[in-house]
Image 1 (cartoon, helix red, strand yellow):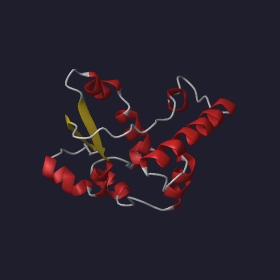
Image 2 (image 1 turned 60 degrees about the horizontal axis):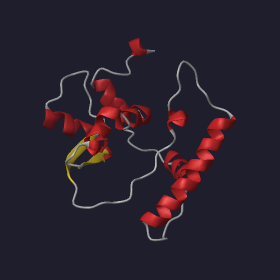
Image 3 (image 1 turned 45 degrees about the vertical axis):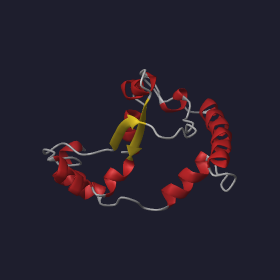
Image 4 (image 1 turned 135 degrees about the vertical axis):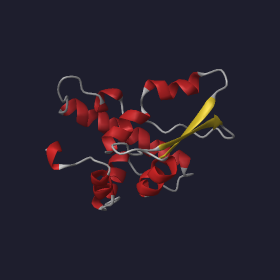
Length: 145
């Protein structure tokens, strides 16, 4: 599911808002998945539809530094997976960029890399309710396998 979310969040049509003359800001709300049942009820989502994230669009009242993203060639693979050395090098480079970003963003309180954060995140089970939620919505059925 994380891959789906990252793909959607990087979609060009969403980023278009930042290039408009009004300079609209965008904030994504991944916490929508913390209680997808409630969100689905509130939005009256039909069967076979589920919420991935929320997106707020408006005129920003702050100008935070932009979070760096993994290079496109690290996340977009056409016709086959292009891993290997170039993938490892891209992640190492991104880790250093991310470390500098975290240091600046936190005023020197944190200097973690993206890889360190992902390892810590994957060690802890999270959103365990999503599987049963998706099954209730008509996904992850025996026919999907």
